[in-house]
Every structure is written in structure tokens, then in C-alpha cells.
Length: 518
Image (cartoon, rainbow, N blue to C red; front, top):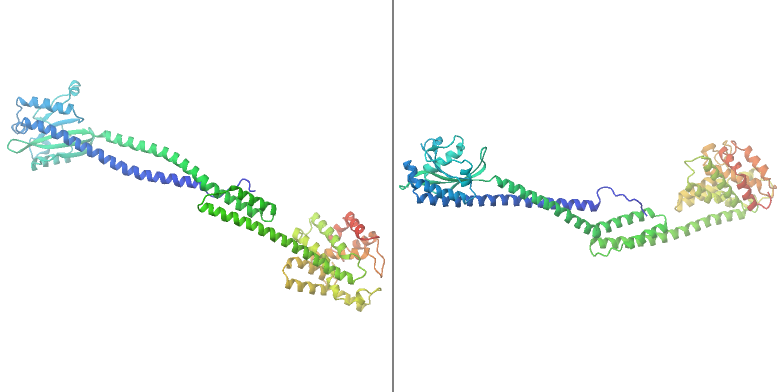
């Protein structure tokens, strides 16, 4: 099973949480922005309605005292203070900050704005507040020029509806100013009655609104995201992650049937039962892995049987050749064993590391029995001649190397597995070549000769020396090893001779197993 699995990029769980949180934040931002604008407009509209209501009430009170005639006459009769008292009460009972009346001493001069009356609450009077009487000039800078121009225009045009000004001044802050033209009994504009309310607290209310919304969104996002991630983890992320890991396990396990079966078992243990696309994906992947595991098992069994059959055919062919030669005596078994001894020695000593891979060594050992395949085409009268061969007969015998190459080349061209049979061809063709170049059939020398053939050369000669023939007795092991040692660097690859001579216990084991006498 995969341990400490790491996934590239952001995991589905984290990505889902991020996307979901971003979606909530974006949606909330949009809703908050829209709500903010709506709330702000609603608050401002309410303030406008409020100041208009207060102004209308104050205006009705002033009309009861013919305030327009007082302004026009520039006089303050007995009812003036009584009117102020009632207007003071209007201010006292409202949330407005200022209630006053003004007029232009010279209608053509915006800076001639003059108080007609102002109001004070009881608290303002106790804190030193003073009344402004009719004829008191307004303080310079009390109004911005653009506001003075609008007030002037209202008086000149005799505007009858309420006008509302919204602005921010350094001395008074953010204010709403509602004004209405006061007319005398002849219907001539005389001045303006004004109310003002400080709306700086609107900003505070809006800031508090945004802060509360932000806090709510943060808590809502955390809670909902946690719930969503938990649900997504159970129904989506966990099954997908398990499926992904299972597929990785299965891929890594290819080549090991037990590991494949364990991977399939772990996948079945997940037991995703949802009927959505993930459940369908789980069902497909589970079925696919099970089928592939069964197919791999069948393929492995078929491959093992094929290898056994192939190995059996090689031995069968080699036996057929050996049986024609009545004097070889387990030659293919012994040479294969010596080849294995030399291969292991070369590997142990670190010689030819680029060639001596496990597969190469397996191929050489398995195909070693085919090294004398070409002898099947040598006539029996020569192959089994009890005496020494004549020069002419020896030339015919030498042809078995070329014959072996031809036979195996045909096999390579008609069946798959060229890598396997290549070394069989090399050994059949070149195991009689010599290190010094005086061998046959091509007179190759040193490393021009394939390594498998150089190895077989030592194994073949040693077995021929230590085996009894009709034309000679068997050499002793010591004498045979002496001859091999003498051929080091001339007939044989020095490295092959070196590792062979160092493996005496292994050689003794082979001789003991196959030779009745040494």
C-alpha cells in the first residue's frame, strides 16, 4: 500500500473550502454593498422627511403670528417673543439642531443675510446660549456661497415648496438644511424659515452596520464552510481520495499478484454506496480493478506455463542433439552449471557491469543448452567417430557453429523473444572463437566475441577435458584447470578464467553431481 501519499497541487477538500468561502464572501459583499446603499438612501430619505415635517410644523406656527409681516416691516411686536417661545418648544421636542429664520437685507447681496429669529432649548440657554434678534447680521462664513445663492434664488423666485440642502462644513459637520420661503400678508417673499439637523451619526450607523455585517459574514462563512467541508469530505473528497490512492496502489502493485489482490480488497472495503457520479465511478473502478486482477492472474499463469514450455523445448532440443552424440554425458547440464558459476563470479567481481543485468544472466543460463544445436546437421559418421578426426572431417565438424547460428536465426525470425534467443545464437555461433583471434568460424578476438560465447568457451572446454570420450580418458580436475589457466589471455577471456579458477567448491559440486569419476 502507498504510504505517506502526497498529492500535487491543492487537495479537493481545501480547494472546495476555498471556493465555497470565496463564493460566500463575494455573494455577501454584493449583498452588503446593495444593502449599504439601500440602507443609506433609506436613512437619508427618513431624515429628509423628518426635517420637512418639523419645518412644516414650525412654519405653521410662524404663520399664526404673521411672521412674514414682521420681517417685511423689520419690527418685533409683542407677539415676537411669544412666537419664539413656541418655536423653542418645537425645537425642544424634536431632534433638530437649529431652527431659525433669515432674510436678505439687500436681495441683490448674498452676504447681507440677516437673522430674523433663532431658537434655543432650555439646556442651550442654561449653557450660555444667546438669542439672535431680528436685524442681527449672520456671522461671516456661516453659509457657503453656493448655499447663499440657492437661498437667494428661492426668495427671488418665491419658491413655495421645501428645499433641502445637504452638505459638510468644517464648523458644523455633515448637515441637512431644510428651508421654506416666508411670505408677508401681501404674498411677497420676505425671508426664509430654516431647520438644520446634524447627520454625522449616519456615518456611525453605517459603519456599525458594515461591521456587524462583516462579523456575521465571518461567523457564517466559518460555520457553513466547516459544515460544507465536512459533508464534502464524507460524500466526495474521501471517496475520490480513496479511489485515487487505490488506483495508485494497483499500478504500483503490477508484477506482484498478492499486492494486486490486496489492492482490490482495500478498494472493496471503501464501500461507496452513493448513487451519484462518484458512486458510479467507484463501481466502474472497482469492477475494472477486479477484472484486471483476474486477467493479470490468467496472464501470469499463461506466461509461467509458456516459460516452462519454452525452457522444456530448449532442453528437449539440446537433448536431441546430445543423444546423437553418444559420448557427451550430461554435457548440456554441466556446461549450463559452469556458465552460471562464471556469470556469478563476474558479477561478484564487478566485471562487465553494463552487460550483467539479472535478465541477461537469466537469458545466458537458460539458452546455454543450445550452444551445440548446430551438431544436429553433422553426419553421424563424423559426430560419433571413435577415433581422431581427419583434417577434412574436422572442417566439417567446425561447421556446427555456423549451422547453430543459422538454426537459431530462423527461430528468431519466426517467433517473438529475440532478446532471449540472441544469446543462444551468440553461444552457438562463437563459443569456439579464441581470445587471440585464432578460433573459428570468423576469427573474432577479445571483446569482439560476445561475452556469452566467451563464458561458454571456458565451460565447454573444461567439461570436454573432464569428461571421458571414446578417443580419450577424462582429465583430472587439476589437469583440466591447469589447461584452462594456460589458455588465459590466449584462448580464453582472462576475466572468465580468473573467476572460474576462484570457484573451486562450486566446480567440485558440479563434478560430484554429474561425473562418476573425476
